[in-house]
Amino acid sequence: MKIVICGAGLVGASIASHLAEEQNDVTVIDASEEKIQRVTDQVDVHGVVGTASYPDILAEAGARDAELLIAVTESDEVNMVACQVAHTIFNTPVKIARIRHQSYLDPKYGDLYSPDQMPIDHIISPEAEVSAAVSNQLRVPGAFDIKDMCGGRMNLVGVQCTAESPIIDTPIRHLTNLFPDLVMTIVAIIRDGKLTLPRGGSEMMAAGDRVYFVCDSSHLRRAMATFGHEEPEVRSVVIAGGGAIGQMLAGEIESNSENMQVQLIERSAGRARELAEGLRTTRVFNGDALDSGILAEAGVHSTETFVSVTDDDEVNILSALLAKRNGARHAVALVNIPGFIPLVAALGVDAVINPSQITVSSILEHVRRGRIQDVHPIIEDLGEVLEAEALPSSLLVGKPLRDAKLPKGVVIGGILRDGDVLAIRGDTVIEAGDTVTIFSARGKIAQVEKLLSVRLDFF
Image (cartoon, rainbow, N blue to C red; front, side):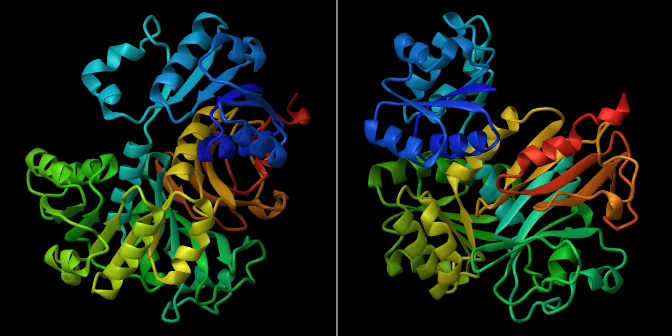
């Protein structure tokens, strides 16, 4: 597939890396020669220096032959105009744009993006995506990562093992006997930054491991309990940062969680007044999230969850650590710089929200070919969990999983059939029409697509 990516920042470079690994023909445009040099040095892509909305620059990037344009520059306006130019001049079939300013996203202006106005096929709002991700964290405070799958029938959950976790040092194959009615499959173990996929069942989890599992959503609480996480439902939240994400999160909690108390800390006095006037029940404090006095005034010592979503990674990490020291049970930090992510858990922060990875996930959902319906990258970016429909011709269909000869780096996480979630066992047989969740290690997507493709003997 010929793809043009406008923007070589964190999101653009990450998307380029993912798509180039899958043998796509990718060209990246950016006004910064330094960014283009960096991405072309690191990834097998073409680079064009220039403003991504200019017709001549898009033409140089090959937009006339492109099947897809992804606009993720730092400017909403450049992203929108790039999509318009790609449609009007180059007839690009699919256009995806990242749009951040909330005024552009107001539902009452939705007609702006209709095919005969500004033809954008998919709009990605990082702030809305991040707000939704944090809301999920509040639902399951013991998890450092959680995503809904298969229309909410399954969950992908990341959880850290502690010394008190009941199942550490137990071979994974024994979990079926210990919890026979629990529909849960461990799909990945991350230890010291290295990924292990449980294939033989002899693998054991240890304290400090970061583990991903897939489970029936109705079994989520029981699954968390097997790891020793039985934290109560969150009733109080302190949010640090009153930008678009903080405001959106507070508003979402007000709308959906009547019994939850929310305090919000905002450093700018003018912005704090604006938030206080716009939010209904949230208490707004004007001050620095790194000030212990402000944290105490906001009730951090008794809060269940502290969420730091300022525009400064260092402030988010340090304020989360300070909140934990001052009594917060659970701390979540927004971290933009990928290199910081592996360090944060070791410092004591319970969960990390990475806007770039969340945005990449949303975009990849629209890019994947065939019957792949959704994509969920894990937070360390070592792999992803896919939702896919099993076709009658798929190599997965009609044989027990123990005989399926799955490629190295691929694990089946769950099966949804007629609305029911099935446990994954060696004798489980995937049927045509099932929705299958598949963990794929980074760079193994092509092999997953081959599993889902048409067999030659099908003809």
